[in-house]
Image 1 (cartoon, helix red, strand yellow):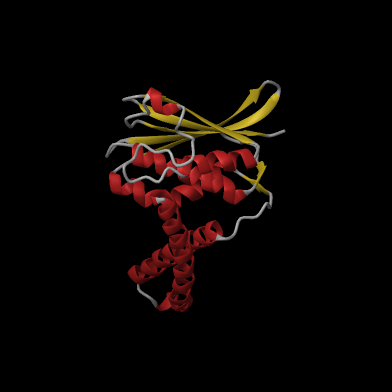
Image 2: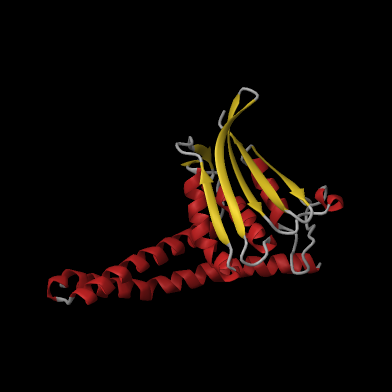
Length: 230
């Protein structure tokens, strides 16, 4: 019951977040309008003020980008298929969740293979999988360590696949826990609700993708997501 209560709290938090984000957009629009006026008059402004206006507009664009991602993420899921880039989705997730890594002093390294083919998949479902796995890797990592995210293409028994993987260097998963880790509500964290990984597995199944992991207790864990292109 406590797990379901926690899940309900998270659902309510998601709805409240979406409402709050909508309210934030109005004052932001007023700020953007004033900055645009200043930009139009930049020929009459000192150089240092011009730079401040430019930096403020860049910051506005970043905040707007994050707001749109949050709203997109909280909207009711659909079965719509998009042409998406694994690397682009990863970058969007990292912008949303970067503060969690920064608070722990964790560096995130990216090793993306160039010119990966796009996937035909639901963007929100892929984003939800990545966000969960990135967040788990950050939580599992000791302070001032690193997380490595890789993407690459590989031939899998005659079928072309795109792989996405995330590696942390935390405590790893005990052997007796590894068979249970993708089960509903299973968690080894005292504050966890055990929903994230089982949700990732269900979403991967819907995408005709596969999620699995390798872990060595005391050394860390790597999660893999395999997307079939055909």
